[in-house]
Length: 429
Image (cartoon, rainbow, N blue to C red; front, top):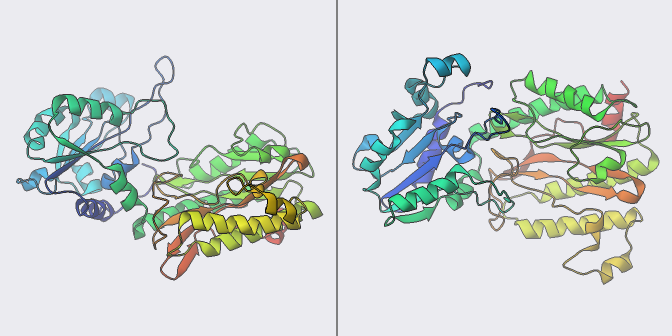
């Protein structure tokens, strides 16, 4: 891997925390993600199942993990299965993890090759009363593709129909919502790399440059810093493109007088930053652009101050909405009368601010967590208000990554320029 090795103590602790949530005599089974095909003999890049990664640190295809904290044989309480390498694989794909390397990465001592799974598994499964299997229970998941986890649930039910199946996802959502110190350090590294890319970009942007040229500049800076690249498909949206929330074509010229919206960030060691900035292509905001920018910045600062222990998702977003209403009135986009007559289920501000203010962040960009759980120290959220005025061809969004702490919060991106004057100064230096 490109990134520096991670202390296996993180994964040992993650497994210990999970064990404390399991029912008596429980077996947990996790599978690596599939390698997805393209056409002919092509494949997409491999992305590990983040729950498996969270519990083992193994970032390799065809991996399987069994956890059975109360198994009578201590050697069978944590069992890892790896793809066995051979000379052909070594020539065409490069070396895979050895058993000893996997022990060092994961802290798991019992390691077999993946082709041995069924033989070993039959000597474990019949001791279990409850079997936890994984599914993607993210509320925004809408994929029609059948995953390895989905296939395995059917396979398990066919082979072992009398076992009591349990849902692993709620437990993983609960655990992963609270970041451990090592995870926070990895997120901070992703934020630091993102900062380097943004500073590089501020000195590169000028009228006439193409959106995809900016994408290339960022990728260069990210990869040279041990990142695999973008944490998500980058949004580099100039002018009216910024009013398209998920604009990813990145194929237009950046014009003099336009504002450029950049929703771009790096990953590091599978942990993801998430940054948005809006900058003037020519290095200076117009009076109107600056008024909208400052309004978004005030909403951002107000929203950030609410990301504290004890707050809860729906109340937080409702309060942010009130702040946004006030700012939109100040910009002449809404009236008090429109607010008074609005449908409470469809607030008037949604015309100009149609998305949420925050989401969980971690191993997944839209990380797992429960919106009904009150904010706790160790949770990491984005904070990303925006105002999009389609009739003016102007969209501005600002976003940083916020760690909830016992006495408030910490902005992991506080060192990345956000104030308009600072951005203009760097662009014109």
